Image (cartoon, rainbow, N blue to C red; front, side, top):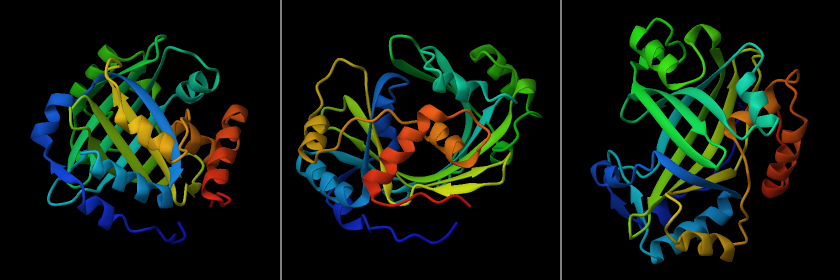
Length: 265
């Protein structure tokens, strides 16, 4: 991918008190309601400053508050999981592997969304060497068949996503906020690559019962809620054969937000 200039977030992150992984265990929110928002890096700087003033804390691992992630999404030959989302099927799943690069921890993850809008996630640890191919791992394959609608034989790697994540926690520890920047995609089937430049995807994760001060902060900065899937946006950008008409509107919204055209290689 061509090099893209990104705004430094070190100054606003310094103002955020740290929280450890052990403390985060109390708010895993594996069964939750998600709300997504779209903005750019310039607005994110101000959002982080307001979050620090409101008492939010940032997850810190190995002395860093920004963590690189590497994820691989799997799908059927006909891209059923992508199509289910495109066709607005309320009950749907996604299957991916994810490596938390700094720690080396890697998981096979199954995300389910039910018809009430709630998201649940199940996962099993796998070796880093299986990030792109877990089919030789009997335990992982058994786990997939038990926890999802698919078997390993039906799935193959479709797309790799690379991004940097900031994770915030509110003072009451009733919500978690993930902030993804520097998003890059690589499609295994087409060989195409794309980047969202300085776009930022924010996801507010709650159990649905607590109020959120962050919603007010985002509203103050005119950051609106946006239904957006990294996987679906990435497939739309990198696979011309995929039936993705509905998601092209999402691409235009991203380009409007960052005031740049997204180029695909």
